[in-house]
Length: 302
Ligand code: HMG
Ligand code: MG
Image 1 (cartoon, rainbow, N blue to C red):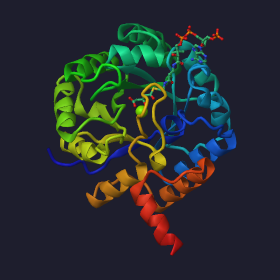
Image 2: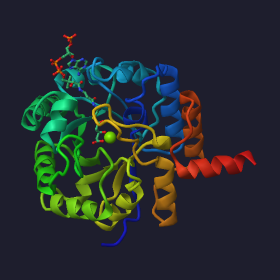
Image 3: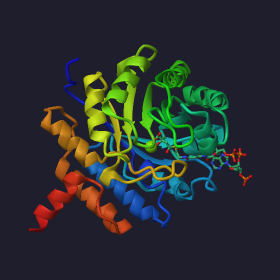
């Protein structure tokens, strides 16, 4: 399959990147991060989550973040909603697009959202109805598509079943998440081949955590499978609170560098992106997880 000429990146740093942080991060710092990502040219930013603050305390201030960000026309600022309550809170905060999240493994579904896969899908139905009434688009996630921290191997057919249901209930795109980052390029290709029999490739996205250092290879494998939407996290921040040891998503800076090298357009300014990453890493007091940013920052310092 020919490589796409354009790739859309979904920046999940402010949500997936920060949700696992134990230290308090102020609303102001989160707002600055979202504004810096907007300035770098990202067209889609997942800003926060409307989940239980007992489950994910770091996302508790998401409504305040939404109230203070400077929204640019043409940029989507999205949030996660696990149930109708979360959806309604998101709408009250002025959110125009939400994401629902299911899993391909039963054990992960229980740990992450305290219900079975089929219960979670039932819970999403009223969200889909309400979203239609509000004219809000809904993106779907499937976690653990290439392995589960509790169950181990996950069959591509299990992923296809959940992705198919999310697509059928009205999710305009389904992001397939290698939550624990154990997937390889071969497994990634097989998984997309199987799932694309049920959901068109142009409606699928790849969401790779880089725990085993395979995310870049998996993105390239996905491109070869005709996938042209990828989730990534500035400075490689993150991990999942319900997947112990999982590292951050693949770093946005590194993905942009890869795509630039392939002549694939993203509309993103790499230097501005690196700056956004430096700012949030200073806030967190931690080195960047982006290889590209590490080298470039050292060059600027010379
Ligand atoms: P539960 O305990 O079963 O729910 O949690 P409940 O209905 O019994 O409610 C318990 C309490 O939470 C109640 O409060 C509710 O009011 C409150 P209390 O009476 O005890 O004071 N509550 C809420 N509060 C705020 N917002 C809400 C909400 N709903 C209930 N929306 C629930 C079920 C789904 C709420 C919980 O399990 C939860 O919030 N889970 C979120 C977990 C999460 O955010 N995980 C990380 C995101 S997923 C991810 O990272 C993977 C992804 O990146 C892709 C990949 O990498 O694979 C997307
Ligand atoms: Mg994730």
